[in-house]
Image (tube, rainbow, N blue to C red):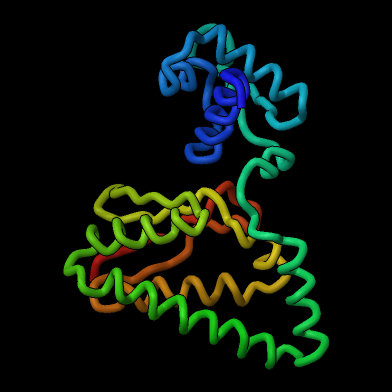
Length: 209
């Protein structure tokens, strides 16, 4: 990968993690000139991986924001999505919905046991979220967390099993249940934004009890 390709990948990564941004914001994050960033943005727009919209400013010209298109998702890990969807369809046809539910429940038990080992020994919400973010990021979810107005927020900027989750929403139900069990003694967890429903990222609100 040459220097230009690396810079383009960094731009795509930032927009995936933080949402729409201006050329100036990108240049500050990447420590590049605004002109250099604009050249990459134009190239990515021509390839169909970026689009822009203009937002009216209080003064002067509108501010231009750049965002990813659906085509840009090819740059991010999607865990053999076609095979996953085919397997889900096959399980449903052979074993029915009950069989598929059993399969997802077994996956949930295994995932919960793994997460519990890393998360439950930690005494605070903050520490547990840090551990969970590490686990989820290693699995390709591009996770992070923030504290906003006294509430914790867990963000997942990418869904590596999006195709499977779209075919079978029980995957999403299962993941929410796992998060709720990991924090049940300290906080309530609700999903406020959902990639499968068209949101830019999944957002989970974690409220201390």
